Image 1: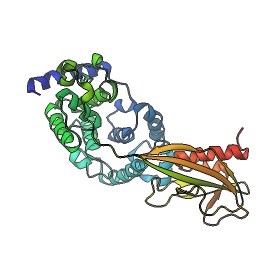
Image 2 (image 1 turned 135 degrees about the vertical axis):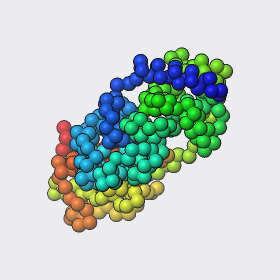
Image 3 (image 1 turned 180 degrees about the horizontal axis):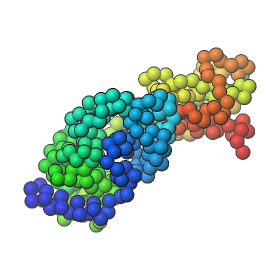
Length: 338
Ligand code: SF4
């Protein structure tokens, strides 16, 4: 790609962004905390899904100090349903760091904040502080691969996309430029069915001009789907549910769950007393497809290793989405909901 293309692309994309930019709550502020929260929530999650969580989060934790003072459990309770819970824990750790050290002013300093990687650091520094730092994520890699007709994959594509993003960055207005590029990737140059006819840079796009859009980005080998079975036991005794903390190192560490274990044999192990099968369902976590096999038991005595709580006490606790679904089925089986 020649340099004359860079200035033409910059002009076309910035003009388009000024007309088409999505009106999002985190775009109405320069508060670095609000921008940071939005960037973390938007990792692996669509804008439409993030909006209600963002509003709820900012009401509950309106400042970095409010977040730093919250317990991990309170933070997870507000985050629950958004998935990838590690993001919430790291955000809280980052807030503790920032409330002690003050807000970093550039991308390099942001990268020292726990949980903040190169993409988020560049996004916050450019949007909140006007620092000329280029963002590169999957969206930017894809736009670059198509514009340049670049057939590389993996690390090689990332390296080239970084160089391109640095070269083409609008240094006079890096925050808007980065958001323009993100919007282009998220709404026009989408992974499936890109809207080339509505694209402001189509005349500079090698893939479009050569009718080879479907070749970019080139396919890289994806991790194989791993299938697993998760048995979830819902103990119910004397009107109380038995739950426990998720063990350290688990996907949902720090949250609460009904006793569960991964197993290929569906009914191995204990379960003394009356029991009833609950509806099964499947869910995905990273590259795992998990068949959830839940059942309700009514033990004759309460297991002292569990915490026993009434249904209304479970509401405020952070629980992973599959466990919440199991709770819904258990309540229905017990006649606790209409
Ligand atoms: S023309 Fe199509 S493929 Fe090229 S950048 Fe625009 S949307 Fe993407």
